[in-house]
Length: 242
Image (cartoon, rainbow, N blue to C red; front, side, top):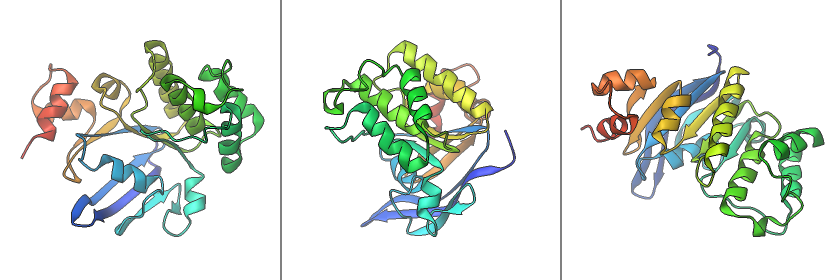
């Protein structure tokens, strides 16, 4: 991992009415690092991800992507981010390739990069069909292709394994590891703890809008004093600590 931070989150806070969704959270993700964002539903992960990707603005604090402040230069910052949301929304009457062309154009990527992602995510058989007719697995692979197209510096993947078969899960894991080795930064949110432990360099456990534990998977095991337990048990122990 490089000492260069591609993503910097500085004391961000977000409220929705009376609900404090994210409470003064800070984190840094370096080039060549996979950071796993963990927590139960309602812990604040989705709100933090929405702020990191520029889809929600923090009430206070700052987010910097590759040196560009999200608040001051949102378009420049967003162009450096590839994002897979948990809930996928597509233009139903675009074909898969048309959708990827649209995303690639926004990122400044060329036709060759679109074709590479179509091949990697095994979309060739459906790329000419309307997205509205795609299965869950095909929609997830299209979303992943859109996130990776153009080789963004920072990739934010929210529940990337949902809808994938075992072969594609493994293929995605290897891709994440390869892209990390090439200097990309990742923020990954997943409930699949075996995947998290395998790919994450560091992980942060959120509860009630704050981090309650942070460190490498090995460090989290030591913190929980659970060296041999399944990582899922380690997570539940840390997430429930008072």
